[in-house]
Amino acid sequence: VKRIGVLTSGGDAPGMNAAIRAIVRKTIYDGNEIYGIRYGYRGLAEGDIYQMTIDNVSDLLARGGTMLYTARYPEFKTKEGLEKAIEQLKKFGIDSLIVIGGDGSYRGARSLSQAGFPTIGIPGTIDNDIPGTDYTIGFDTACNTALDAIDKLRDTATSHIRTFVIEVMGRNAGDIALVAGIGSGAEQIIIPEADLDMDLIVSEIDAGRERGKKHTIIVLAEGVMSGHEFAEKLSAYGNYHARVTVLGHVQRGGSPSARDRMLASSFGYAAVELLSQGKSGVCVGIRGEEIVYGDIIDTLDQKRESVLKPLAKINEEISY
Ligand code: ATP
Image 1: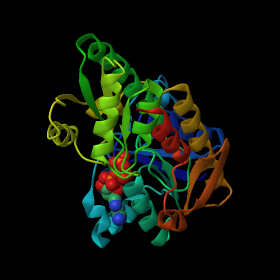
Image 2: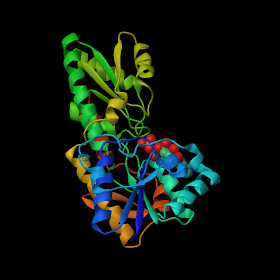
Image 3: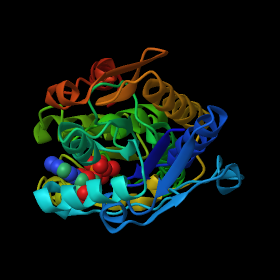
Image 4: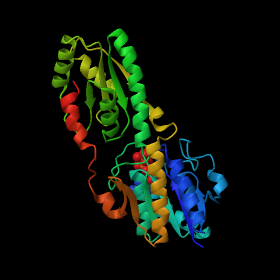
């Protein structure tokens, strides 16, 4: 009987629970044991570990957040932190580990792999900013949440003839801004992947006003600058007072979308399946509709190419 450990790390994302559920159920189906590690790498180093049963994951699929909790634990970058973790894994007799998280969490998984401990990474972050996969768990739900909020802001913007700057998450990636912005018909979508041209933005706002536009919705990715900074830049041009809405952590919550539940269940299943085939030191992903996996070290060295790149061109030509 093999003992697999699972933890979630970094920022939480809707669908992490669905992945945990799939991992627990598939491991038990295979006749093996599954151990939940609470609070990410911190809980791992501190031995906050318990054997999970099917009952632990009942009624879980539709819930946002992560039932295993998550934490930031910078000490994991040190030799001592890593040694503590490996000691605990040995103590509990755990043979392999599945880590669900973002870029930083992958680095932790890479350290464990390099130290000889079989580890698999699953991409879980709303930012969609991890190499080796087209999509990450939580991204689709976050886009839908942002979209819903922007639709509502549009109602009030139209009623008062106002300009709104809506700051969305995504770290250094503009994927959430692109999807939510194009989906909501925003006049401007500002992403870190494109050069910022304030003069062009202002001239497009002017042209819209001349055509009788009742509102201007500007969706801004947080990776460019903050919404307030952007509004200040805009007001320097004169009559361009903008209301700023920072969507913030609402984007991280909520029940996962169908897409995220499916993705998370497929990733969870694939990770357990790979371990049973003796594969580790890899991370899973999706390319097109196919679940894939790649070496975790190579993947982290890759430059991420967003699969949504074509949307940036569409944005340029239809958002104004
Ligand atoms: P998100 O992108 O959603 O915030 P993340 O996984 O990128 O998620 P981080 O805070 O960057 O979030 O990383 C999570 C944890 O992973 C860190 O607190 C730390 O314990 C571990 N970690 C990060 N970087 C490294 C590294 N270079 N080496 C070892 N462990 C790391």
